[in-house]
Structure formats: C-alpha cells, structure tokens
Image 1 (spheres, rainbow, N blue to C red):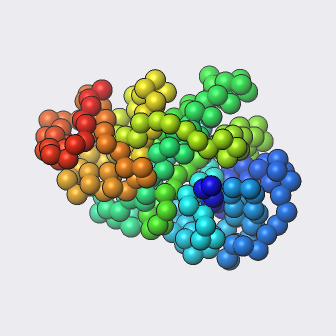
Image 2 (image 1 turned 45 degrees about the vertical axis):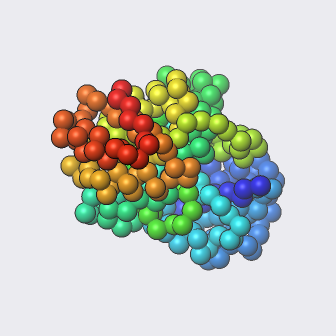
Amino acid sequence: MEIYGIAYSINDPAGSGMAEYIVKYYGLGKSDVCRDAITCYVGDNFVLAGFREDVIYFDFLDDRLPENVSRYIILSRHSSAKKVRSYTVHHTGNFGPEAPYGGRPRILSIANPIVSHKLLINLKMLAEEYGRINEYEVSYEATHHGPTDVRKPLNFIEIGSSIDEWKDPVNHEIAALAVIKFLENPRHKCVPVTGIGGGHYPRKHTKMAFEKNYCYGHIMAKYALQHLSPEILEEMIVKSDPVPQRIVVEKKGTRREHRRVIEQYVLGKGIILEYI
C-alpha cells in the first residue's frame, strides 16, 4: 500500500482550510512522525503535515516526512492576475534559466500523473455536485514554480484565485473531498502523457484528459517554448512516475521550429507524438 504525504503551509488559508477539513473528516489526532512540522497527523494511507514555509519552498519534504511516504500531494492557493476562479492541479519545475518562485533553474520535480488525473476528475465531479462548475474553471495548469528537489513524485491541488476563494469553506470542502475520494480509492488507470503548448490553463490538454483519459505529467505552456530543447524534453519525460510514452502537442500554439525539435527528439525512442 502506498503512503501519501499531504503537505500545506499554515500561512495559506486555502491549504489550511483543506487540511482542516481532512482532519475533521477522519477525526485525526496529532502525531510526532513529522520533523519540524507545525502540525502532523497520520491516517491509514497518508501523513498530513503543515509547515511555516511557503509551499513553493517545500524542497525539504523528503527529510521531514516519514521515509515510507512514496508520493506527495500539496494543498495550496492559486494566484491569478485575472482573478480566474478555479480548481486546478499541476506539477512543478522551472523550464528556463531563472527560478523566481522557488526550485532551481532548468530543473523539474518528478510528476505524479496518475494521482493528479484522478484529483482533476474528482474536482470536476464535485464542482458539478456543488453547483460550481459554471463559476469555476476545473483545469490542469502548466508546470511552474518550485519545489524541484524532492526525490518522490509530487503534484499540487489548488483553489484560485483570490482571498475570497481561498477562504471559502465550500471550496475547502470541494478540494479536500477530491483528495479524500482519491485516498479512499487510489487505484486508477489512465494513459500517461507529456503536454506541450497551450496557455497557463491548457484547455485542450485538459479536454484530452477528460475525453481520452490522458493523465498529464509535465506541461510546457506556449509562453515557455523559448526554453524548449532536447534536454528539457528529456527532463519532462524522465521526471515522471510513471514515465509517459506519448507527447501531446497543441499544434496551433507551436511554431515549426518547435515541432522540429520535438520530432527530432522522439526519433528512435518509441515515444508517440500526437498533435491536437
């Protein structure tokens, strides 16, 4: 049985709200199995821990959560200049030479495609059940920000995109229940893929996730294509568990030189290239 490490920042109202719902749902008592954590709880197949640091700096998780934890789920807020109301999942890392929001340059964390896909499906189902599907966008986000240096697969689940949404107890319930439903039935079959192109909320890739059962690891948005290289493509593929054997490219959002790099990369590797 896999043990999931669920972590959040105690200074984040969205992450804290989700965590509090999970604690109350299971009736959890405090535990001391976490190192340097402000809060720590243990369930049947998970450890839940709160830290002072912001989530983008959670590179320390391997050292602070028990060794038997095999995958991480980070509970977090999501910020958007356009104030898009959203329930999102995504993976982390920096494609370019700078890392202004945590992690290291040109390094990606290990993506968690099966877990994030099931969370995405649960979020959509719950948004419909709670009557919020028309108010909130349920979507993948492109890979961005830290942490990058954890040794186990990691993904974020987020509530966006302003303080009003972060503090909304209904949002806490929806996002927390998405995690709880996963924990209670983690088995899930899907087709692991890597995505290229689209906006920060890559709607075509999200559509493929729902319609073709594609579970995405890393997604490189159109705005990051200046950093596309064989080395970054390799990072996107190998930094995923399971490793995808398909790259899905939004053709309209990529230039010919980008497609040439991708087409050259897949030669002889047995990786399927699909344009959408």
